[in-house]
Image (cartoon, rainbow, N blue to C red; front, side, top):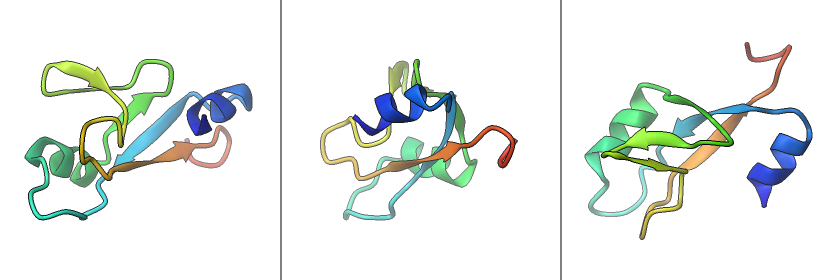
Length: 73
């Protein structure tokens, strides 16, 4: 729902943020957060061979930081 609202406001990209929660974090999610992986809100991030969004995988606590045009680019 948040992603849909952001896209409705003209926000098209976000940065992956790892939450550092949980005992067994996915290394690929940790790396995406460390690298500040930028991805398109309409497509997701390509991680581990698939297009996903932060928090969409089971037990994933990752979040996103929207990139606001004119402020963050």
